[in-house]
Amino acid sequence: MTPKQVALVQDSFAKVALTSEAAAVLFYDRLFDIAPQMKAMFPDDMIEQRRKLMAMLAGVVKGLGNLEQVLPVAGALAKRHVSYGAKAEHYRWSAPRCCGCSRRAWGMAGRRKWRMRGAPPMARCPAT
Picture 1 (cartoon, one colour):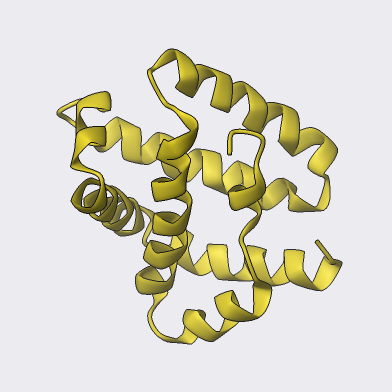
Picture 2: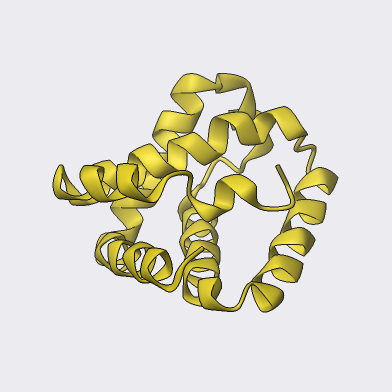
């Protein structure tokens, strides 16, 4: 990613972070609509899971300028997800949901920026 792309992602995520609970709810609601079989992999009470999602995304976005630090953390997360039963095909559903929910979380203004950026970094993380 170029420094400009990193800045765009970080600026956009800062807007999402203002409504992190709502963004996480959008993400999981959409994910479970698209892939209802995945709901069994998560706890009934999603409050802590939503917090973990947004904290991990915040860490990844913050570290985009230093992928040498981010990729090992993302790889460790992927390994934990495998131990929870995640499979490669699950990421096919989750990565696009994240982008779509991010756009909805801050409205139409974010849509053009996301299209300009291309695929988000998480779509290329070691777990996929």
